[in-house]
Length: 225
Image (cartoon, rainbow, N blue to C red; front, top):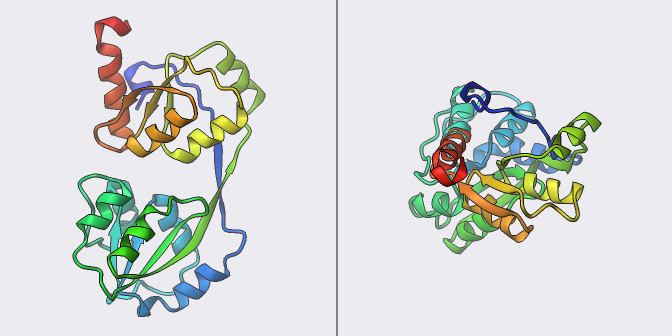
């Protein structure tokens, strides 16, 4: 999307996604899937890695919620229709938008370093929550060519999750705080701010398309050109 709008894009992947190193808890939960009232997916990766370990079709009795449109699309591509997608794509809105969860058994397949907010909010609402690691994120070292290109400078650095910020900070313990950070949403922006970045752009719609739109609006301002 950025290239289509004329931007020069440097790909600098700061994390890599891998299957969980201990799949047994996920496999056990999936073998008992029909015992849950609902499964909540908070990322496309969560959907993908769950289905890689799923045997058989999805039980019709188990409702599914998705944190946002991309995750919902990943579910629909697997013939599962989410019954709830919040209008604001964060864990807090997902938890508050569900009907009463008291007494419900809820499964959360998620990243190894996921925020605890969703599980905590659901438990506060009276749900029995089981969290399982569906996949892991690890710091990734980009190529030497990517490092060399980055040294030439950037007008903005985009972050699409808190883990991408943390990965960048791990690669550069003393980051250039003059870098303009563009973040996909407020949670990611908070991580970037705490890591020392100047957060100049936060998408209003928490999707990659929303992030591109926010960058366009930012650079269209006279003082940025």
